[in-house]
Length: 103
Length: 310
Image: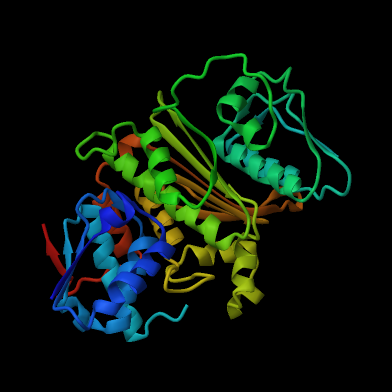
């Protein structure tokens, strides 16, 4: 089974609110992580995002499920700044697993 | 209590102005006298609106005096300063499009994403289209506005206000956001962060620009917003000023950072961030963001960066 979620359909072209991202992750992604072969987060149509949103969406998922979740996650249609934010959010999730962040 | 606003409130005049309006107001009505005012920056405007509305929501009567003799009353009206403070005054001019010139004072509400777009698109017309000469300016403005506005909404406990201006002849963009909340130091202290008990406002601002320092914590706050705003400002060779409580942190275009206390034992209740950058120094936002993440240690080189598809 494959789960494909369009961020632009859910949030529009501008992704800034980390609270909404965290709610979306818990409600729309987390329940399916162990049930699906692949989860596609489709950023097509997303014009911009900030770290608050991306960390709440992606870092939390990596922290929760470990590095292995990256085998099941596909980030589609990212423009260059969005891709940087996704990569940094993955890195943040991995750091949290490694226990480097204690702020 | 009467506050007579000085003739000029920009650049070097901002900190003394914040000390002035931060003076304890005692009891009774508060009067703001605008008759001498001639020049004012967006930073001073949002600080004024945030403070006036703090007084008003605290039950104080705030009167605006001297607007009939103030030479920039029309500008204050165009910037929606008066209406943001609940002052109604007939407008003796026709409003023109603000696009590419200024963003009137607006309250930071729950639609930070849309507000960020509206402000950035106003400052950089056409920049929301890929390949436009102002694309990177739009992207930088959107990022700074949304991360700072998120801080005002989620951490301050008060109300935030934003405004901006473009000086077209110099190609300068001036962004400013201020809130009338608890300030950075108290935000850390109320979160129970142990180190915050032994620091002051300047120490708290310095701490806030370090990565992974947040008064809220995950899953929605990772403490990187202000860190990246500071680093992006450095890369854009911008002026950045962060003021909270009695402290101020200043980043200059040459990359040097300095701190100072507000003059005359002044105290700004809330947090103010203002950034001024030249449009021609911002060309590739993705590259800037990557460099900012690398420089702050927020992005390491890894073998598995994730699976990306076009």
